[in-house]
Amino acid sequence: MTNVTFDSYDLQDSTYITSTIDGIDSSPEQIIESYKLARTDGNKLVDTMYAPKVIKLEGVIISDTQSNLEIKIDEFKEVISRKEKYLIVDWAGSTRKYLCTAKNHIITRSSGSVTRAAFSVEFEASNPFGYAPSATNTNFAGVTTSPYTNTIIIIGSADPEPVYTITVNSATSFTALSFYTAAEGDTITITHALVASDVLIIDTANKTVTLNGVAEDYTGIFPSMIPGSNSFTITTTATGRNYDLNITYTARYK
Image (cartoon, rainbow, N blue to C red; front, side, top):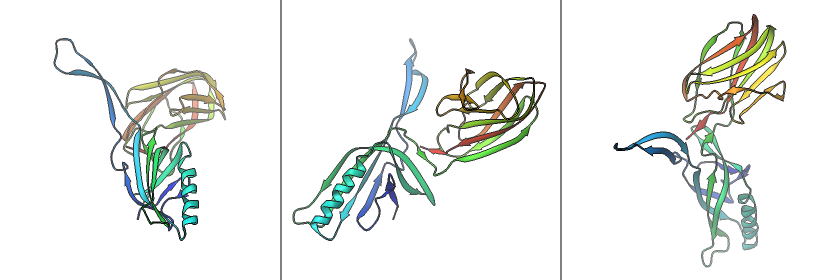
């Protein structure tokens, strides 16, 4: 039996019994943007993106009396009406979570049944990907060279949204930093004097750059990564540098 919770409310216990979970196994719909080529067969691909994922639960609500059943139905409706909460299901010996809002729900009581009601809920995950239960952190300590190139293995089946944290241990005439990833050829550049104890954070999910917690200007494109092996290069303008790099992401799944 697969464990299911929505906003930490158990939908797989002696009262709420979820029998069917539909939509988890399939990938979300991929939307393809393309344009027609003049006097040529076919189209030219521009971009792809994913539509919201639809997940449907079906099951029953059971109680010992009609009054208690109706109390449980009211509880169920209140929980299901919550917006943008995590639906968490068992997956591969762990869990997977989807940020969902219920589009609709139907509760049906058969004639003569006073302690049992069937339910059906259709959720929409506006972010179409399932997330691992916790983040993955990889550290690269004591970087002193420029350019500095390394690789990282990204788990999951959808592109991650990594956060790159650079903590400066020591610096001499450190005036700029560029971060390049080979996956899409993206480079972001921050031109600012950096000194010991500075913390520079490049957040690709929220599209922000901060230096010691304060928004920082940048040029270029946020460096993206893909599932599998990713090469990255950090280039610094400095006569001397020593910094730690931390890459944090939560694995995402289609």
